[in-house]
Image (cartoon, helix red, strand yellow):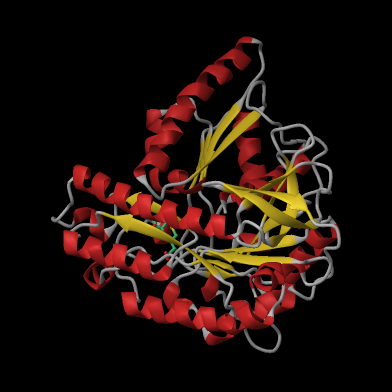
Length: 454
Ligand code: SAH
């Protein structure tokens, strides 16, 4: 979502004459768009600011000025602290304020004021943002043609998982009206976008206003699938308890919806899940996965895990490992529990020693990496639909994404950028695949894996 938000900031700043550049050196303004989800992410901001201070000073030595800004969730959570730890910062503003960026830049630029804006708005910012411009492809000098784009449809969270800062930094759940999302999807398609990833902190609880009653996410996906040019749809991130029948049915009915779902479970222990204030237990999650597999037999699942949540015992961790074995994730993210200021779990008195967290994380990641490799290897010999969207490191090489989000490399002989190519997978690696173009590849590209495995 920060990638998407940064794009919207660029849209707001464009009328003021700002264009995006590749590197901070010599820039007139640098905005760090930050994440507060774990302590590591937040700490990175301060080390990055230390480096940028030198660039700012160097620019000032030549008689020019660099506006240095911190945006996003660290700004929201630590506004005052940033200004006292890094007094050379000119602007600090939270995720719900960037439609006011023009005004902030004027104040910081003209008057040299220090700007701090971490208000949650009375009116949602989407009502004031300009229509999004074509997304920039950071890998392409020419800028404008990207084939895969993010589209925020929902923001904020009302779930209050006891480990999580998101409800405090992004605010309450808000869904953009259906018509707004459709207009943005059409604009993206018109610029050559073939794949849209619908974004939200709780994207599957989307409830967008529409003339004949609110749309849920299943309905929204079906609508976006009707947009000319949109061949692939994804959505992230989902809260398991909010997967409704309509959305599960969309996995069966909407051909454009990719057979891949990121569905964070966090833990396999019911005791831990309860302490986390998750509204699912491990069996609920198992049943949900079963239903998704009935709807879309070739679906691949991904998840997030937290190890070492306060009170987690060896037996609890064993439950997580058991769930991992049973589900067979094709990809996953896993983290040591990181206490976040202001969250209920941070003040629990049963913290797990860091050494134990580290040991559990290593065991879990070893298993998850193996599952990913096993899945990648199972793709060898199959034909997969790959949306080629960026140049590779080697000359002539292109890289794209399979339906399962795997990076697939192909040499330039058969592929065209921005096109969904049929590639026969020749090699599998831990984090990527290699493929070769298939001559007579044509129909139903999104079901290619299913057909190949049938
Ligand atoms: N909405 C998602 C969460 C997305 S946040 C959900 O309901 O599951 C991204 C991931 O960061 C989370 O899934 C979680 O695994 C991790 N995370 C969040 N807070 C954390 C913390 N305090 N310590 C460690 N990992 C955390």
